[in-house]
Length: 248
Image 1 (tube, helix red, strand yellow):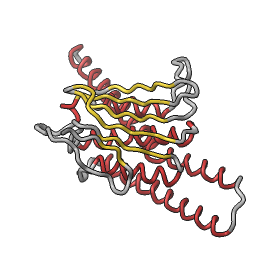
Image 2 (cartoon, one colour):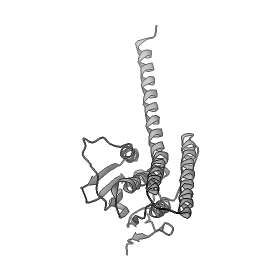
Image 3 (cartoon, one colour):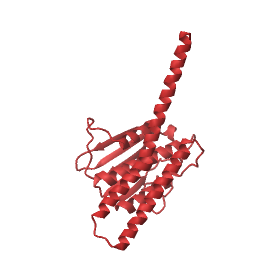
Image 4 (spheres, helix red, strand yellow):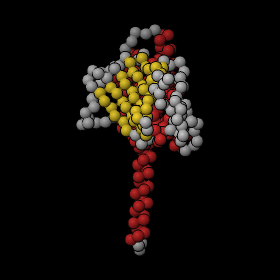
């Protein structure tokens, strides 16, 4: 017969294993939603819109090219997710460049004007976890703008909000969303908040009917930047239009 101390030890181990399994399930659900489900949902929205248009054969071919590109993106994201779950080492991305590329694709697909503001104090580099999770937060916010807002413009701002904090803000001029806490929260919103918490930060969504939506995420600088990094970002992301303020 096992001693009470041994039984308690086994119970703690089981509890620890259950907590780890719950965290893994949340991780996989979040990643599948952000990397796969959003792309597939966007494809369905595009196809529904395309079906209602008067088009010629050339338009059909262009739409097929778009579907092919989106399908490749889904496959690439699935491969990357499997790669990440295996815990293999990945190269550090250039966060600002990646966000600029994301906005360029967003503009091309949606015809919504997108601007990236990089304000003084934004660091030249982020840690790998910060780069991935901040990118996914922006990606999810843009997906919501694309599918729900009816906006004509969206601005992403990367800036310090205090001496020891950094803030990522996504603002659109769309119809606004229902932020009533009694309303069921979508998986995408849950995922954004979980990613912010994972980095030691917080995420808020502010919206008023007809006055657009603001997604704001704030993080302790020391938790998202490599140690000792103090320089300002001067990276310009590809051909994307950037509004950048530089200190004198």
